[in-house]
Image 1 (cartoon, rainbow, N blue to C red):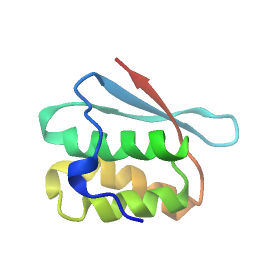
Image 2 (image 1 turned 90 degrees about the vertical axis):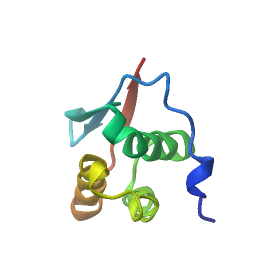
Image 3 (image 1 turned 90 degrees about the horizontal axis):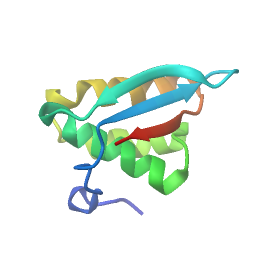
Image 4 (image 1 turned 30 degrees about the vertical axis):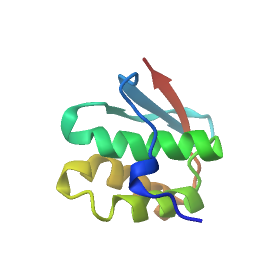
Length: 96
C-alpha cells in the first residue's frame, strides 16, 4: 500500500535527522530540516516511523514518494539510493 504525499507526517518539530549504519552502527549522515529539504525530511521521517529503520524496501518506497519532489530533495534521494545500492539498513535519530 502506498502513502499519498499528503499523508506524510508534519516535521515542524524536527531540526535534524541523524542516520546510523554499518557494522558498528556509526553516524553515517545527517539531514537538516531546511525549507528546501522539508519534503525529503518528511519522507525519511515517515519511513522511520513506519518501519523503525530505513531498509532497502523502505528506501524504494521513499524513492517513489520523492519522484515528484524535484531537485530540492536531492539529499534525501541520495541517502535512499545509497541504502538500496548497499543493501544496508539505517537507524534514524530525530533531533528536535
